[in-house]
Length: 145
Picture 1 (cartoon, rainbow, N blue to C red):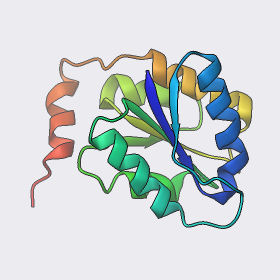
Picture 2: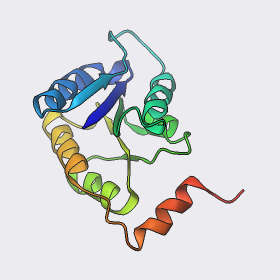
Picture 3: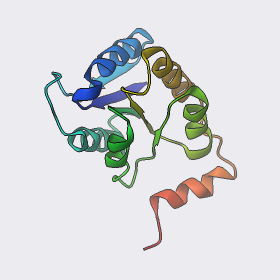
Picture 4: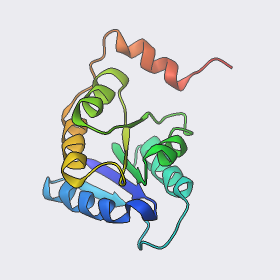
């Protein structure tokens, strides 16, 4: 699977560890930055991630910041993205099964490396359940104005 990963400075180290983990699992990984732990703004990297998931360049996205909240908000500004903030494997699996999430967000200050890997494993292994969830997911991309 082709997966994009992006972070802010607070999650720079977690991003590096997860990128290597994904490569070890056999995935093709697009690291969208940052390239150093110098201070950056999470929306910039959330928007980059959303763009490549949204246009189909990659199949899934992994967004990381200190809490996971800010970058998940940025990613979800894109109408084709369904980015779920997850903190354990069940929420990651349900995000895929019920919401067809195409990206997950995690907080480096809140989620350790082992839990982050477990979340990634659940996210990548779980298919979308379809059925009754399909029409609900469709509504997420076409909200009433």
